Amino acid sequence: MQKTLFVLLCLLVLGYAVNGTTLNSTSQNISNTNSTNKKVGVTASGYVPLYKNSKGFYAGVDLIRDDSSWPYFSSNTVAVELGLYTSQTLLASKCVGFSKYDCQKYQCSVNTWVYNTVQYPYFIAAGPTAWANAYLDYSHWNLEDYAFFPSSCDGPGSSSYGSNGMTGIVGLGLNNQRYNYHVSNPVFSLYLQPVGGNAGYLMFQKDLRFASSSQAAVTWKTDKDWKGTVSGYIEVGSSSSIYLSSVSLVLDAAADTIGFPSTVYSNVIQGFANAGIYCSGSKTRPSCSYGNYKSRLPKISIQLSYPNSGTFYIPPEVYVFNYSSYLNQTIISSFTLNVKTLSSNYTQENYVTPAFDNSIILSADVLSQYYIVFDGSNSYTQSISLYNASNNPPVPGSIPWYSFVIGGVILAVIICACCRCCCRPKVINVQRTIDAPLILNDQTQYIQPAVPVVNYNYPQQTIYTQQPQIIIQPQPQVMVQQQSQPQVYYNAPPQTYYN
Image (tube, rainbow, N blue to C red; front, side, top):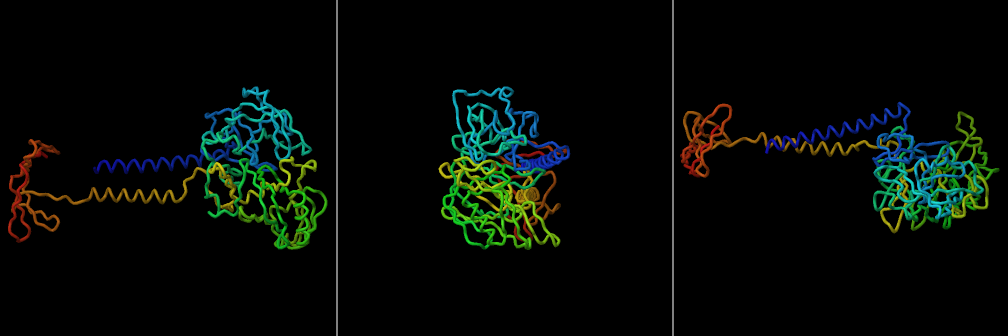
């Protein structure tokens, strides 16, 4: 029993050490990756690293599973945007400024007899579907459904959309595409601040270590494409409230500008005027004059009403762009307002497709303030929750502190159990003798060396230690306790043990 416990203890210590070594190796791997300018791409951990360009965030997708290069970018890894507003994955053949997906190289099969039209926020795509591989995470998400392989992407939106080397858009919605996830009811989340040498992380789980509080700041219900219709109020500082009625709320981690519907946009501009900020000019990032202390710039707040809940804020550091200041930068004289108006009636950067009319599109800068959880665990009701982001998040792959505490407690309990078992005093029942007294448990007993102990239940057997010694115990046994009268104990029939 003692040997078994000792072996278990050793195995536990060894496993704990190996686990720590693995984590240290992972951290070292990330460190080495940064030092050699390699980008960590597709993983199998559920933590997909994100990268940032001049507009927003994107991820690496492996078009052919290549474990030999994992977890680094290989020649088959391409950059894609995250479609937080669609279930359809787009791999570009001919689509605005996207890089072309080489269907011949990756042996995808195009269904020329199936022709689709899909509305993304800034363009309308048309073309066939194609079977293709695309891996965001080897263990949690890969494209098993047909991808959209458009032959044209049109609309009066910006012709530069999708540039910067993007090969497509990964649709993270759940509409007819649930089996791209390796769980039946998926939950994934976004943390869009630098951590672990990367610009952020897409996580196929809910990990509140990336939030500063376990209480969500905002929660609203959505459809399976993660688009939710909300009502509530917008306020610019303490100015009068701007009523929202059935406005679609859309998240776009690849967008660099906050978008409001045209009517909401004009009311927001008026709200800034009420706060002493006068904006004019372009419908995209208008120029504003201020002439007041930087600390007095108002926040934009969006308050959601039932059945949704919460208020989230757009602080000055998000909506102020290219400002001029004086008096040790404490007074802002002018700045560019990082918002734009959206409508399917507009052109260029103000254009959205009809499916996204009357939508507030929150840009990457707004989303970076929050840890965002997309909850599809209920197949009938999906929701998005925004938690205030932690400023000190863990490096993905590290063990949380409470795991060490729990492990330490378990280890201490096992050590105590082993010590109690190994150090427990042994009670020896032997024949009375006057030559060799032995005190055990406050009782005086006498032992005679090399006296055989006899047990009649089993045949005699000799047990050898270093040198053979026969221990024989007569049938009667007499124990003397201090000055009391001798007591006689009759044991079972004798058996001989050999030490």
